[in-house]
Length: 461
Image (cartoon, rainbow, N blue to C red; front, side, top):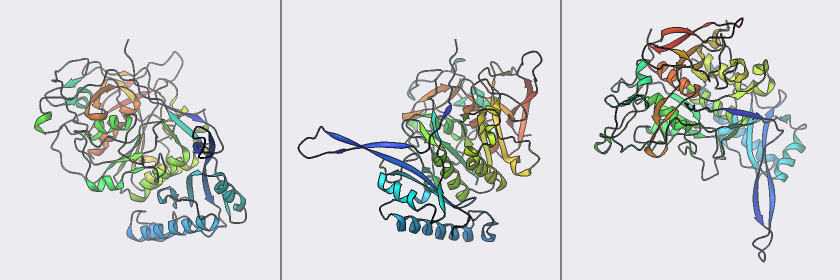
C-alpha cells in the first residue's frame, strides 16, 4: 500500500505559551534545580496610543518597501523599543517582531515572571493590551522512500518518478517545468516553513536572498536562530520543488540531482517552525509583516501548511491578523499560495487555505489554494484521495504524489501531500507566463454531493 506524506498543523488553545529553563539552586548541590516559567507576550497598542499604523500613511502608498516608508518603519520600531524599555529596561525586544502596518504591536518571547507582570500592570494606563496567542504544531511528513544518497548512480525508474537525463521529477515535467538555463528573474519566492538547508548542492542562495531570510521560530538572541537550519526537512523539500538546480559540480554529475519547476529561482527562507515542529499565531504574524516590509510586486509567498478549523472559523478573531496580512500582501501585488490540506475534507476546514480567492474584491485575486492531483501515467489525472476539496476555495490542482525532491544533508526523497502541490504552483507562478490548464477533472463525490470541475495547472496559458 502506498504511504503518503501528510504535513499538518493542529491548533491548541492557550492564553500564553510558556517555556521552561532550569537554574542551579546553590553551589553545594548541583543536582537540585528549580524550574522557572518563561512567558510569551503579544502587546497591541490601542487607537488611543501614540503609535499609529502605517497602512494609511501617504509615504507608504507606493509600497511598504519604498524608501520613504522604510524611514517611518525604522523610527516607529525604535519608538516601540524605547517604550518597552521605559516599562522594564531588562526586556529584550526583537525588531523583527515589531509590526507597524495594519496595527502597531510587538511579540516578546521568554519573559520572566517579573517582566510579564510589569507589562500587565501598565497596560490600561499606557493604552495597550495583551493579545491571546494560539499555539500550532506540525506533524512530520511521511516519506514514500528512504532518504536517497546523491552518490547513488541514478536510473530512470517508475517508482521514483525521476528522469535521470533531465535530473528532474517526472511530475515537474508534466506541468512543463524542470528546464535549467532560464532567464534570471527579479521576483522572489518567500518560503514560510521549517527553514531550508542552503548547503544542499542543488539549492542556491545569493547574498541578497540570505540577508532577507529570517528565523521567527526562536528568539534572535538564541544561538540556534538561523533560517537555514531546517530541523525537520519540510522547507528543504519545498525549495527543491520550486527552485532546485541540479549541481554542475563534477563530483555530482554521475549522481542524482533536482531541477525544480523553475531551476535556480530566487528563494528566501522564512522559518516559523522550531525543532519541536511548533509555531504560534504571533510568530506567523511577525513573519508575514517581515515579508510585507520587504517584498515587491510579483513576489510569491509559499505557505505549504495549514491548521484544521471548524466550518465558519476562517474569519474567526484568532486568525484575523494572519488573514489581514495575506489580503494586504495580495493587494500589494504579491501572490500568496496555500496548500488545501491533506485530510480528505472540505477545504473550508483548513486555514489559511480556506480564504476564498473568488471573492469579487480584487484584493484577493492574488491568492491561491492548491489541491493535489495524481498522475499515474502521462495523460491520466486523478483527484488525490488525501487532498482536501471544495470549490471555489480550491483554485487549482497540481501534482502532489510521489514527488522526487531535495532532502537534508545533500540527499533526496520521495514525498506526497498538498504542500508539494502548493510548491509546484509557486514554481508555475514564478515563470510569469500565466497559469494554463492541462485538463479539468472531478473528484468523484458521493451521490447527491456537489462534484465540481477542478483545473489541473501547468506553466503558460
